[in-house]
Image 1 (cartoon, one colour):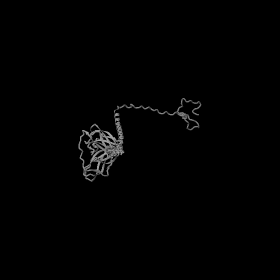
Image 2 (cartoon, one colour):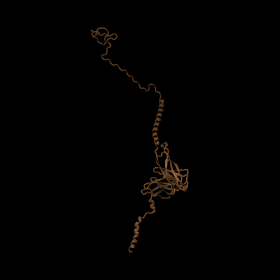
Image 3 (cartoon, helix red, strand yellow):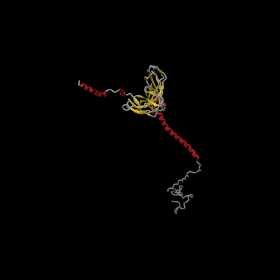
Image 4 (cartoon, one colour):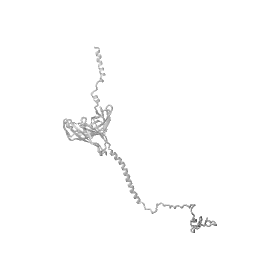
Amino acid sequence: MRGTPRIAALLPALLLTLLPLAPPSAGPAAAAEGKPAVTLSAAQAGTGGSVTVNGTGWPSRTLLMLLICGRATPARGVVGGTNSCANADGRAVTTDADGRFSRALPVTEPPAPCPCVVHVATATGAKAQADAVFQVAGHPVEPLPAQTAGGRLSVLTDTRLDGSGSLLTWFGAPPSRTLAFTVGNVGTAAVENPVFQVGTAHGVFAPQWDEREWHGTLRPGEKARVELPVELGAGAHGDYTVSLKYGGKVLAEQPWGVGRPWGVTLFWILLCLVVPTAVFRVGMAVVDRVRPLRAARRPARPPGHGRRRRTAIAPPRPAPPTSNATLPWFTPDTGPGPAGRLSAPHDDHPTSPTTPTTPGRKGST
C-alpha cells in the first residue's frame, strides 16, 4: 500500500513524457496532406498599394502564378477565366522544399467587377489552385451571374484537335484548329446553350481563356458532339496546350505543336537580296540618264583641238650593197667573141672619173 502514493506521484511525469508521441491536431494534418492554402496580409487595399500573399501545402519547387481577379469567389472560382484577372500585373513565385511561399503582389483593378480574389495557380507540374477573398478599394462590385442548378456537363471521351495548317500559315497567318469532344449531361436538369471556356497556354505561361457558346440543349443523360474553334496569334509557333473549362472546372486538355513559319524567313532572305539589286539597277539607270545631259551641255571645241599629233614615221633605209654585187659600169660580155673576153662598158654607163685606168689595157683583163 505504501507504493501506491509513489506511483500516483509519478503518473504526471510519465504523461508528460508520452505527450509528444500523441498524433498531431487536425490543422497540421490538413497541411501535411498537401492541400494548397492561401492567406493575405490584408483583406482590402487600394490601387497602387501591395498585399503579401502567403501559401502552404503546395508542391515543392513549383512555379506559381499570383493574380488579382474580378467576378470570382472561392466557392465558384474565377468566372470568365483569366480574362477577368489583371494579367499584366501578376507575379510569379517558386515554392520551397516544404511547399511554402511568400510574395508581395501589387494591387491593381481587374478588368471585371468585384467580388474579387487573389488567385494562385500552378504554372508547371500538377494542376492546383486556391483563392483568397480580397477587396480592391474603389472598384465597382456587381453580383455574379446566375448559375444553372441541377445541370452538370462532363467530357466523356475522344477529345482531339481537328484541322491542319495551310500555305498562308507557313507565311505567318494565324494557326487555327477545331477542338472536338463528346460531352454528356450527368446532372438532374437540362443545360441549354452552355458557354465553354477555351484556353491556350504557351509553355509555362497561364492560359488565355476565351468564351465559346454552343447552341443546343442537353437533357439529363444525353450526350452530344461539340466542336469549338481555336485560333492563335499571327506568327505563333512552339508547344501549346489547349484547355477546356466549364463551370469553373477544367474538363480536358490537349497538346498542340505549332510549326515555325519558315515562309517569313524565306521572305526576308529574298528581300535582302532583291532590294540591293533593285537599288543598284536604279542607280545605274540614273547614271545613264545623267551622262548624255552633261555631254550636251559641254561647249563645242574647234577641229583639231585636243587631238594628239601623230609623229611621221620615216621609211626604212635600203640595205647597203654587198661585195659581190655587179658594178654599174662593169657587165660581162654575153655576146659572141673570144672566150674569156669581157666587153667594154656601154655608153649609157660612163666610166667614173674617179676610177683609175691601167695603161696599156682597155677594158680587158
